[in-house]
Image 1 (tube, rainbow, N blue to C red):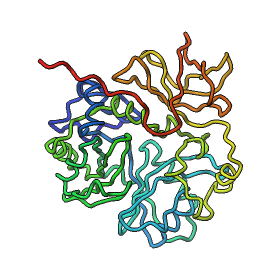
Image 2 (spheres, rainbow, N blue to C red):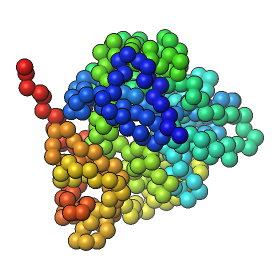
Image 3 (cartoon, rainbow, N blue to C red):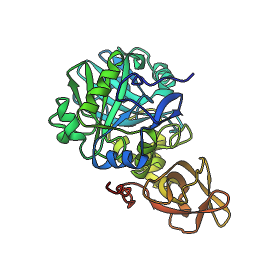
Image 4 (cartoon, rainbow, N blue to C red):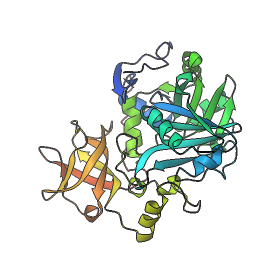
Length: 362
């Protein structure tokens, strides 16, 4: 069943094209994708984040309980701070990823909306005697975000005058019943808002009035791929090991003690051996290449493309994919039929792709 955007009745929400993404109807673009991409880099882009859900966890044992089930530290987090983490099974395979937000009276898990139900069931499976309760509250809230070099000005207009000093996943209560949290979700400075669903159109208008330019899925997807940020359901699934995602520094604590799947995660660190890893790629030509396209080296299968999007400034696709470690220092990799040249950019960090050209005056 397709879920409609909570912002579709806002006056400033006028998509030029739509896309269905993981069961949610999102704006693909509002106008020119290149200009939206530029806004998300250099300005302030206003983004519909309706593909994200919220799980709320209450009870006196909430932090310790979640701490024992995820890869990152939770029980040592202060109020108004947060962490990114994976939930794994006993084999060390990722079941889902999440942003854990610590509020004074509860935890909020920012999670892929399509996996909220299975994530809640996963946690409940390990709830025995702990004083904790988990609830999917996604239906009560709407999700929107802002990213770009000028996101700080939009945040300041909402009362977050200390935005630039906020740690990643630090939270702030905002007048109007919203929670703002720092999150560079597309690789540029950014924040997200969890707002009352009944007030969603007003919040979209409020950010637009503060100077944020609506940007659709196409621009944000390209930007996060360029930054090497994996998304669930595309770059992360239940066959993926945490170390393969190249998100170790932000997703895993090796000092927190035992958790579900910890032995496998620790063994991979100790041995230092990975069969494959997530890499950023450039693929010649802008024609669509539908994942999971095979990566080939001299006719041999060396990996898979998991995400791909045309870059507004070049005749190439931005892509993420899993590449066999044995092939990471090689050239002559291709994908598609007919074969298209694939260039390995790096495992993490920004690429050297230029900004889209500015339109001519007049």
